Amino acid sequence: VAYAGGPPGSYAQVRNLPATVPVKLPDSIDYKTGAAMMLQGMTVEYLFRRTYPLKKGQTILFHAAAGGVGLIAMQWAKALGVHVIGTVGSEEKAKLAKEHGCEHVIYYKTEDVAQRVREITDGAMVPVVYDSVGKDTFQGSMDSLQPFGLFVSFGNASGPVDPIPLTALRGSLYVTRPSLMSHTADRDTLVDMAGQLFSLVEQGKIKINVDQEYPLADADQAHRDLEGRKTTGSTVLIP
Image (cartoon, rainbow, N blue to C red):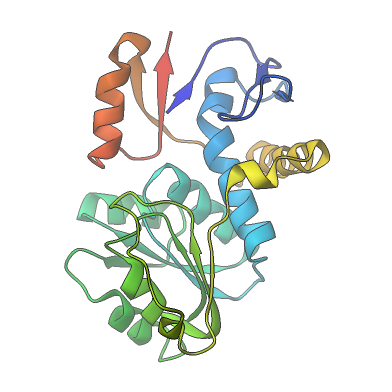
């Protein structure tokens, strides 16, 4: 959930970072957009540029493609020339993901994710999977990877993944659990990450969806809706 308030050019604080490291918004980006994009957009930045640097022409698997992070990721991947297989939970979310650049959708609740990835890629599978869902999608994620592929766990909306033995990493697979905090601990890196995001937004390659707005007094309902996966795009609380 993001909090909005203030004019363009104001300072936006990235949630969970100390107040001593604000990032100045460009004058072309209003504060509501800034509030909606910072956490999610910078998450996509470190996923695509630092955790596993993507290259044009690659095909990736990205879970929760119609969520706040997902919709930014779909657009960022398209800007990079990367093909995305995205998982969604409904036809409405499938339509939304495709509108933002997702080329193939998988209904992860009813379809076999790995089998669909195999069909879509003609058996090649994918070099990297970005998974913020967790427990419900873990096995499908692992089974969708190429040899030497990377499983990126950056959330656990369905609950944490159960402990796994190292022998489960068949195919010389890699697993990582990155966080925004570790990537933005260095001030120069923080500024560079924000700059990459601002640039794509200013160029119109990424559009920020503020799909839900709640009065600050209804923050509890906003969190319930998020936990219930009833939202799409970004959610903003208005003071």
